[in-house]
Length: 141
Image (spheres, rainbow, N blue to C red):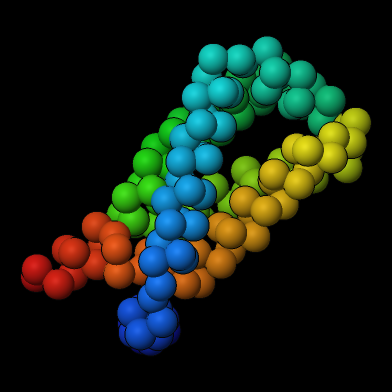
């Protein structure tokens, strides 16, 4: 708990609008990917099929990925429970990078997954920043 408090104090001293904009853009990207997976389930099935998952496992993964991207992306964009929602996203993003090595290599998907995974790790460490719901709630309590 003391580590989180120290990280929050450090983040509040070093907050910039550019970083908050980057957090919002990361959240919006996750929402858009969630919408893409919800509307094009065949695309996600093909990706998971190339990784060798069974039908039942891919059914569960499709729903997990879609809902966590949609809900987690909204939370990240608003800056509410940013670290927790990105911790839920992290296995998906690591899996997205790994799928490119197991199946056919798609450079665009690999680049997207890598950048978002690195941003997720950054915001897990950095937090949500001053321009977020978390900060507003903390200041009003």
